[in-house]
Image 1 (spheres, rainbow, N blue to C red):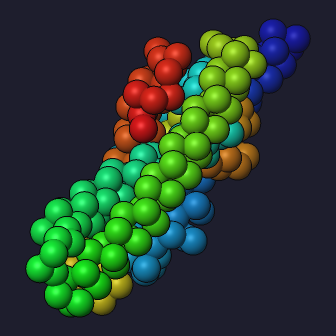
Image 2: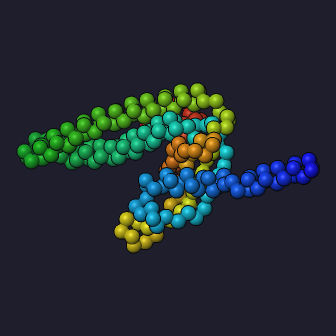
Image 3: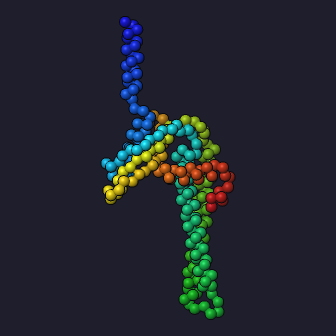
Length: 214
């Protein structure tokens, strides 16, 4: 009788365990809940693929470092655009550089281009300051992290859903990070965006000079 009772308890425990959701199923549920606030028409959402990997402390999955890196990418893109605009202004200055035969029109063009060049130069300097600031914050965060400690789960999720006009299916891929118990999505990015973040972080982690990014 005692053996039968033990076997019954073991069987019941196994049965309960088998009824529980797998990590992939929990991850898919969390991803779906997150995407409710992202997709145009969530009612058309269809999950296609979900993978779960253990997440360990690193720059690449630290929310604070990621936010600083996103800022740094934004400022770097702004810097690149401003450099091009400044070069155009300087080209205009070269074309209309005043001489003894300059008309009021050409002098006006030169002066406006010079003002634009000076304005863009100030913007360049500000962008470089911002990049330096974010770089220093990321490096400080890198020094603080207890790298390789388990800190939750990294989820890859692929899905499809209708576009805003409900005319075609859009396919999406997201990288999401959740807590150890699969209770909440802590942060998430499109796969493309996260790959850009990771690439920038790798460069920052191995660098000691912010001017490489300015």
